[in-house]
Length: 172
Image (tube, rainbow, N blue to C red; front, side, top):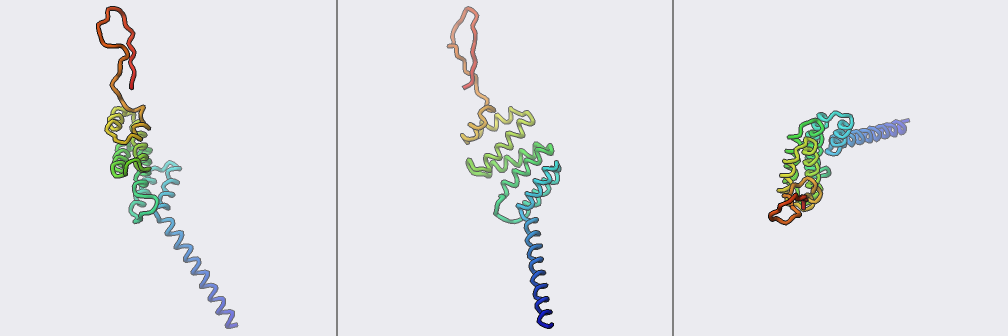
């Protein structure tokens, strides 16, 4: 009987250790950057964008250099801020990510996507055109070519005309 009691105690201890390990894993997963991002996505899917922004802010306080990166988290925050109606903050965050990202990296391109999305949603095409004019990335300028503004080019040669003239104006 003593032996069976010892075996039972060992089995109970092993089960407790496994339960503790599982709970620790679940806790660390739920409180990881990816866990917070997943919870934020679930909140956003339910339309609770303010809560999603709060969860992203919480994820940004968790140390780590893993995926998702700070830039990716900031871009998600900008997306949720845009959906909650805070366009200025969404642009500000996206501009910061764009300036800190390198060349044509994924974060750089996604920051431009968010900036274009916000300015087209708010119908502020003049500001968007100005930003694109100052952009040094050919990839971005090609992608958003339709938002750029060019001086008109006239097909007719300059000169003196006496009669009626049909003038054709085209952009380069």
